[in-house]
Length: 292
Image (cartoon, rainbow, N blue to C red; front, side, top):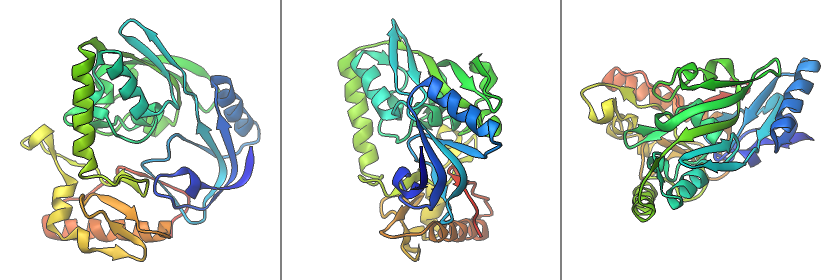
């Protein structure tokens, strides 16, 4: 337990003020205990994983940040049970090595299993929910319960967890047996594609805006990056926050950016797309803390 921990150290954007209290939960019991303590003292809390898809305000978070670092990995045939804090890309890499298919399209995506389930992470027409089977959750009342897939109400970049804020302690995936060599090749091909469009170092929150659901487009989505490219997003900069040169839907910390600068840049980009195309862009990231 640490007081006044800078959250810029725990987000991929590298911005954000301090948390009043920062706790690292390495086991399921650690997480249960941390939530119980917050409940007992009526303290507001927020659970983070890999710190991607998150913009923390410059004022920080006046409550308790609990870092979910539960990282067990258990194989039972073609089923994998994995901790909510397990690194998503490591999970993909390991399943490919084991000759288990179903999540290779998620190669190279930053974050943790819990965060990926919460936001139904996806790429190249597939999502983490495709082979998701069940998960053990922790709610605000410190109640632990296991739920099958139907409970999660998965949709595009969304799940019930965004509303309930329940914590994923562990999740089980039912994968399919395939050729390990071919799966690893697919994984490397996807990583190569991503490397051409995504920053190689942590300076962003990944894609900032959700694609627009549109059935007649490829994968049923109109890419937010395409619209942002059209309005000249890559030329825009607010202070030390800018747009990545190879992907118009990735906002980057150019060095010393503040959360306020990132937020103002995002608002300007939304206005430009609305004014020119009439579409309302919705953030894929979560804002945490107070923004002016």
